Image 1 (cartoon, one colour):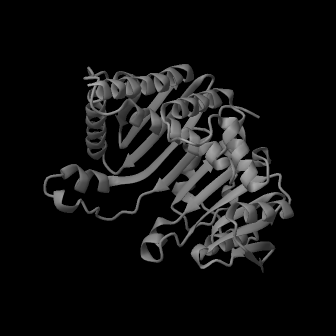
Image 2 (spheres, helix red, strand yellow; image 1 turned 180 degrees about the vertical axis):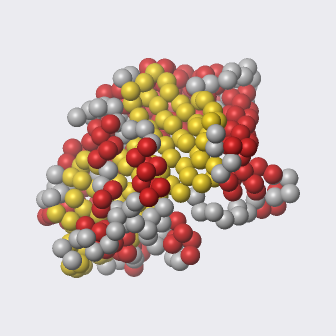
Image 3 (cartoon, rainbow, N blue to C red; image 1 turned 45 degrees about the vertical axis):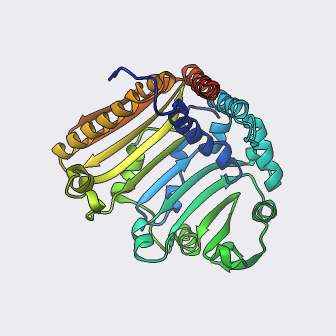
Length: 356
């Protein structure tokens, strides 16, 4: 799909930053909480430790991401352009600097963290207190003492120590962190999240409760490998379109047909890509969603500057049966050029406006 661009209006940085920041959050951003094979290590997700009553799963292979030179090059370009273009930016100027900052704050090396398996139950969050059931299982090479020191250094809070089954739970004394715990499970593995989720993990590992299974686990397993991958079931309830309900047939009907969403972020050779699959209950709903997505992308491309428009043009939306697939893949070097071009275009426009 190619739509002529007006090369004005929306800033190219708004599009390219989304792509770059998504990578940033999944790498350096996770390093303080968490064999380069392009993402196939995503099969290492700790699904056998995840409780059965969850409706979303996600996996981050932080160790492999941090070792990926292709991904590091894109992020370094993003950091450098951000630092050069904004006089107010005071953050890191490279991935190495971001990692060093995180290590200084936590007292441990990013290389000591491996993978993170995230899970949650949105229905429990909706029916009760917000965030009532969510957690993350993290693999690392940390000792128990190192983890406790890292948690204390990172948060600056005091923790009470409790025992639950074979696990040690650290519960923050601060009322502002009520419900959040860190549980040491042994062999460098720990769980962090709400207390109910952490205890559920301990029960599953002890054989006292079932692990996640069924359609959600199968959907996750069938999703392509990647440094990040996810799957979630969508609660079947009417979505409130607000004051525009009478005007927005798509929002009130097609969105309510969505059953499952899954996807992955990956690096293949020197290409960076992502894929999102939206599974609906009818082929007509899938077609409707595909058409709306294509229209939105075309409109965004039309109003974007050249660098952003060329990047948006790499996004493809297809429909097959009841599934809509949104995919993006581009050479890392092209992404780096687009990021640099976007910042240069924005600076040129700012200079022209100021002169005028």
